[in-house]
Image (cartoon, rainbow, N blue to C red; front, side, top):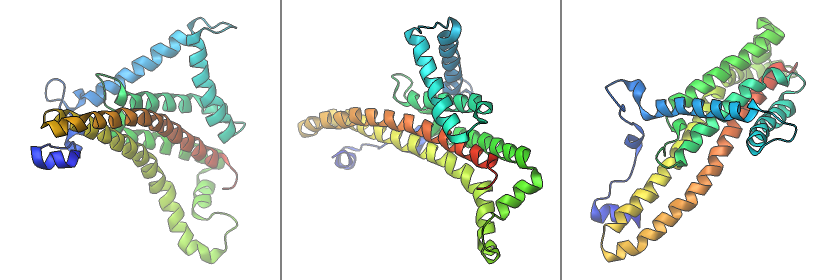
Amino acid sequence: MILLAAEDEGFQPPGVADFNLPPIFGDNPYTTKPIFLAFLSVILISVFFIAASRKALIMPSKLQFAGESVYGFVRNNLGQEIIGHQFMRFVPYLFTLFTFILTNNIFGIVPFLQFPTMSRVSFPYVLALITFVVFHYVGIRHKGLLAYIKEIMFPPGVPKPIYVILTPIEISTYLLVRPLTLSLRLFANMFAGHLLLLVFFLGGDHLLQGVIGLKLVAPFAFAFGIALTFFEFIVQCLQAYIFTLLTAMFIAGALADEH
């Protein structure tokens, strides 16, 4: 129905251009809304967890309980269970990664902000690059450079003729596929989810300005948009979890004697 309105009433559906936001002031590309949202997320996360841990009690307050629950989830479920006995070394990074991605994702459904920072692909790229450096550094530090490279190129327990096919695949997986899939999965989900919300809400607003028949359809567009908002919240949380989970798995693989 929205597409019909687009054809008959000149509705311009949202697209990629709606994600290329102009600078808030000046012509500096570093003063765009996503940049400010990233800085805002750091401030909010810092203030929240400092406040939650400032007066820690045996019987925690609601704020302390909320902070400890998030930390405990990352520590136990994404650190200890995935990485193993060396997990505490990596909990600060996993915790920072999870809370940063989650906060910036949720910005997409927060009134007046309403933009998921991770829908700009440069942010997932940078996070994936950091993870890429971390797990390769861990593997080299744990096994030595030559042993680590050898293990990537020639996985143990594989017949030697298979290496002709397997070695190029393994090299591309570790050097290209992992960081690309890690970043693009997060970006694509945030981009697509926000685009769908724009379609339904802007489409509903456009239908309200049309003839009486289209106005009757508008509430359904808004209803779908509201339902998608709740669904998008689940996706936002899930994507923060998946990104951090895969990071923990990559680190665990780098620490393993065989993979």
